[in-house]
Image: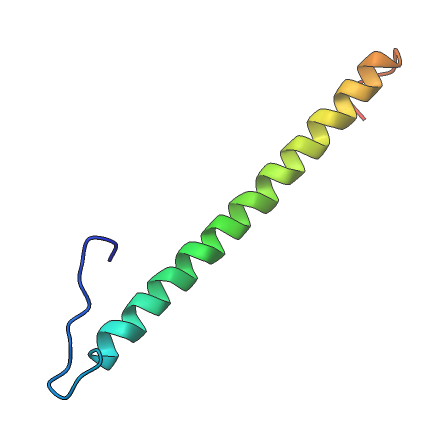
Length: 62
């Protein structure tokens, strides 16, 4: 909805359904970004663990 415009209501304000749909879309986008962030943080933590193990001459596989 980034390229869409919220329609204004006859008596002022915005069309409620448009606003609710926009909020739902933004909430879903936020949820997806938070999930991606969690996944990437886990990948980063594992890469750091492997790097530390390799620097200490240990095994990087557990």
